[in-house]
Length: 201
Image (cartoon, rainbow, N blue to C red; front, side, top):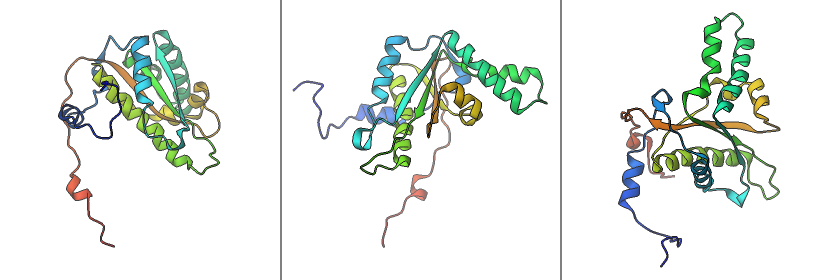
């Protein structure tokens, strides 16, 4: 049987260990290199392999590499300066450099559509969120660090306009990718037992 054959069940302790140890690398700890064009394409292909009711593909990607990160940062800086005219110039400069914190930034845009068969738009947005997480998994599996952020500029109207968002589109996340300058540390995790109960009617 080919290794590419889909199977209903295929247990893998290696995959379980990978998932149980998953941890984002903080963007402040990212350095070059990031994924190249071919690797980015592979990451996006893998990221798009998520549950998607009725195969609507309610998401799209915008990639920022090289000088594009600095160029788009001008929109972020301008939006911040307009919203906070009393803030010092160095804060605006800091905001304009947001995308320079990692070699690659990928915006995942949630693009819900009207579905005649009834798939709600909220469910489509969940699909876009799954894409963001799958992207982190794919990047880590390829040896890259990743962090999923939104921050204030994901919700700013001027920044959304610069991204070319239309209709009901919204930013599901900015995925920062690069290499790690240090291993991530563990953080507190939820008490799953306290969050779980058996339904009894």
